Image (cartoon, rainbow, N blue to C red; front, top):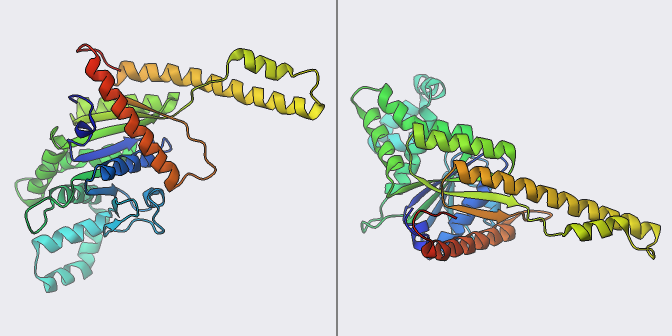
Length: 334
């Protein structure tokens, strides 16, 4: 990626956000969408599988549906369903409604949709491609930026592999032609970026390193940035932790117990910080991408307000990285 201005963050219109389940992938996808919306862009956030939590993080009372809806934050949201995507595609290529109705009701069609390996995954990627290329009546693009909240890593790779697999599996014809169009979008470094999200812990970091290898070596897809989420800083000095453990002479037994609990939590935070720093070093060595670190956010309930805050921290980190990178000699990386 050249430079690190906010412009370069969204110079590629389609961002697939990929990560292990539980690392905050949806939060980062929502944060990216919010940043783009604040830049005045028309943004579509896509949940690759129904039932995701992006709607709640955007302040929407209901989960995403197949029709795009505008959130209070200005981001449009939809959830892709493979079956619905196939039927939408068939409506585009088979304009005769009577014929379509007969097809949709037939048992052969029902069986085919249920049994065809990879068909739903292919249609999901096809829907992303359709929205990325979608135009208004005046010829302008419907969306300036599309952020895709991909499923957990293994399933994400299955989706991203599908266009190439379909191209190789089918002979000349419509399916191969459509698969090639999807593949062109996925592999275009001017249009698409795969952004990775992880936590600085051993298992997520190991999976992220393996995912990066698969995306770059096997699939050769264009990469974006790496976001390390929920990083602990460990701000309590060791001397303070020791003092809290010992407690003061004038403390009551109850106050002493509270002091010891605070000391235990502070020591735990420091230990997490040491572990996080070690894992971030692993990432720097194995995943050479522009990297942003997000601090752990503590909230009783993580909702729209917290997601907005994460987006502000992510945006500020990207701006700081841009200013720092512009002053670094070529070849050095943050």
